[in-house]
Length: 253
Image (tube, rainbow, N blue to C red):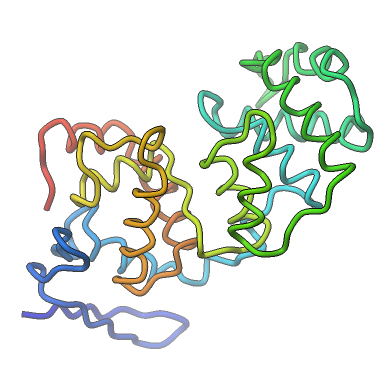
């Protein structure tokens, strides 16, 4: 039996028809009930009701490619998003991104405490990120980025300290691309809950395979990959420990 959702959108009543909960979206991944958290049906309904909140240009952090790459290098694994953004805005404000500074010059800046909501916060991995950012700024100054999404990502993979996740993040943000996916911890957890991924798969070892699965899911539920990526990231971050409990208990609706 199909699922029918009726709600008010854009000042008018809209209806969405979804397949039966037991119908497959992709092999082994079922639509599930739209009222159950973390199901493909739930993600479809959320994307439908929040469609006006997703504007491609809003994905960008920087005003130019140098800033976008720098922002993503300063964010990422092990660094809370607010800390990464604060570090980016700080190096941008003092003009670091307008030159090709040495690793030590950047480190002197990142080693200083950041002020976030009136709190002084230390930026983690300051030495490592200083090295990566210095390399990136020099590379950007001497090379031209490809325009094709996948070629652009491959070019980014040539930067020191940039792997598939960060390269995909920049590609999605800058080119508004739906040909890549950012498989981070939140997307990984959501995939486990949908049976999209299995417990043995990790982004470090199976990134392209997991990306392909995610892109097929997005196509299957009729949501742009870039939009679905952002939506899941936001909602899984908010869910936090609740999502972890679902995973540990083996619950998948």
